[in-house]
Length: 214
Image (cartoon, rainbow, N blue to C red; front, side, top):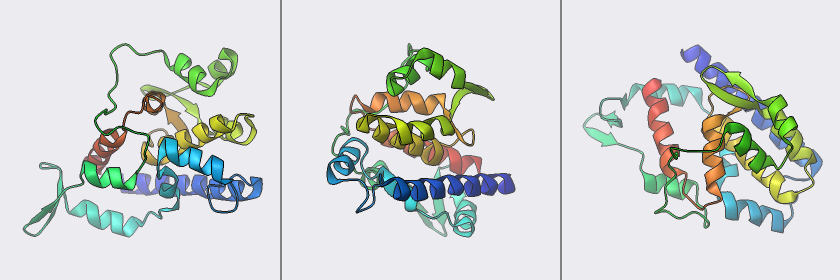
């Protein structure tokens, strides 16, 4: 299990490397000097400090050590007689975004549009294009990240390119499930972000789930 997890970490690192190199080459990076101020502010206003996650280096040795101190029964880190637990407030500070409302947390609705419809709404691409790219991975439907990579590079709408980039971070870095694919659950969360809900409780819950699994 450990070997498989670390392999996935290394593969996703390759995705982040591609992202950085391509952004610099195409002059659309969030870094200073590539994206102009208006586009950069558009991203931060809608999605907060999410792109900083791309610069975080995963220290597999530190991660392995931290897991040894995780207490799955009480969902906290136990260091001797001291218990530490990640909090919503800490995650809010990490993902700071002026657009989200802290009192409106994301939750999956009972009746939601189909995966196909949600992808069409987000991408504003034809039904034929979306249908041809939906894949079944295990128990859930996904869409390959390569499809979104193409949209990030080629979509004529700047706002949509920003959206696709943010969705890619959520799908590959924050909620990775099927390697190299965007999962249906991530698409549903992302579809609700325009309604100014906060994704922080969902991200915190994923942290707990991942640590318990490890």
